[in-house]
Amino acid sequence: MGRIFTGIAAALLVLLSIGAGHAEDDAALRARLLQSMRQGYAEAGPGAPDLIELLSERFPGDLDALMSTTLAAYKAQRPPAEVKAAVAGTFVAIQAREGDRILSAPDADLSAVITAQGDIVRALGQGHEDLCKALVSGGAAMAAPTPKIGLLFVTRLHRILTAIADGRDRPVPVRVMQDDDYVDFARAARQRGTDIKAWSVLAADELPDAKPGEVCRALDSTYGAALAAKGDLGQRIRADLSHELLVTDIDVYRPALEK
Image 1 (cartoon, rainbow, N blue to C red):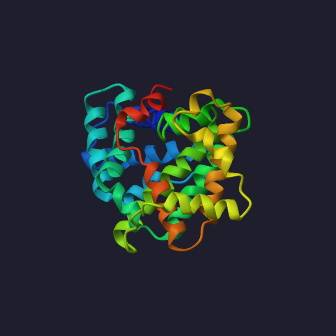
Image 2 (tube, rainbow, N blue to C red; image 1 turned 180 degrees about the vertical axis):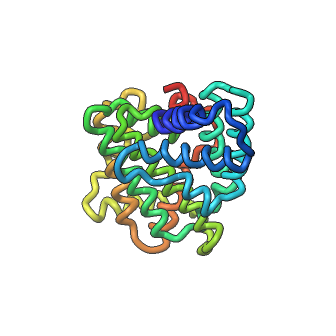
Image 3 (spheres, rainbow, N blue to C red; image 1 turned 90 degrees about the vertical axis):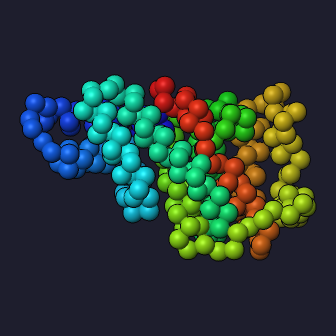
């Protein structure tokens, strides 16, 4: 994720420097800023989801505020880090303000979020197992170790924001967890043949001493079980797990912003 934020900031500076010294009104500058931000996401790799397009279509007020902040930073010749922080701050603000709407998102959106998280876990399990612990204990955001994994984080963010927007614009009844939901979830998973004992390494008291590979496998198994869960219970579990992935504090992005 940090590479994405950096790529956007760098694209802004390169593109805007082309026009340095030329008189240009704010509308033209905003157009070039928007172009450079789209370029930054395009350079994330083939198939990279366009977060700027998503903001334009589903969160236009937030995009407008971001463009105003970026334009002011450019005029004041502020460092690229400020642009990078403004981009990250926009995504955090949306999740903080409207994140609970994910509990009313269509189930297909929730499944897409969980699938994206599972893809991240499996990618980390191939040479970066130690970071699986960070997914459990350190929050949803981290500095992606490779561009490929960074792209997976961008995909997850795109799906989270889509679910939030759909929960706002075409909501289903909000899911409210019941007291025994996770017990019932584990029981159903065991009945399907899942080794739920392996999930014990995810507990707070066992995680510090657990082997990284075991944590990766437990997470992968848990998300797989969440996708397989049926009925209203399955939807509540997917909604709850998706809600846990929200990033509502900019400090959670600090490792990515420092890359």
